[in-house]
Image (cartoon, rainbow, N blue to C red; front, side, top):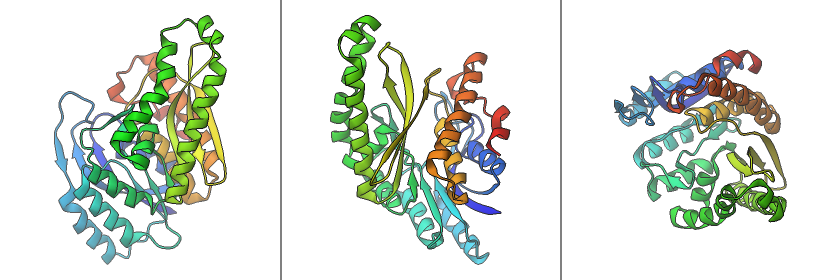
Length: 305
């Protein structure tokens, strides 16, 4: 059985990070070997939580796994609490990545045009070093811009990208059509493709930009995931339902990670992840679940076999 070392936090409530990755990898026939970067009573979207940083334990776990001659087929990195922890994780990857070891990096740095509280330029620099060793990375659009340009230029580009979207929300569907919404959408998609291609070329890796809001001519919204290699791009798009839920990025990346170590084409893995998440989010909306609780994915795990 394929084995993946999963370096991510463990949250008791919120269905994200390790509590999302372990069941997905397992049901897809891959053994998840967790290395917690932190232990939390609940994910950080809740108003109160206990947090225990595990940076100090990473080196000891590396030593023990080296003694056991642990040879993972894949490595999957997620939430990192700061540049010191990122350096420890980079050291882990250097020590365990062999010629045929696949690495997926989910560069958790920000979302919706804003950096997360733990963001520093130093952390972003360490994340770039991780990305250089990756087979696949799964940034959202904010993180893609941060990796390419840092925070100041990210804010400038984000403002330009979202200007059209903001204007449309203030117009009726008929007015939107009159203002050539289709042409504006095409321009937006082409700009995102340029960003993804630049990222793939700079870091010599496969890029999947996740969770991109794509405005439609009727004033509605779809959500897109863009696969970028140096020589081509491919969109996988679905209807947007509900808001932003805890753990969806972790579930998405976990499906891709399992596919990565099993040799599945990335586009097929992305389509599988989108179908899986669409059903889970639909049920979550129907149940009225709070976004911090995560999505109702358990019912659909069997579809990932």
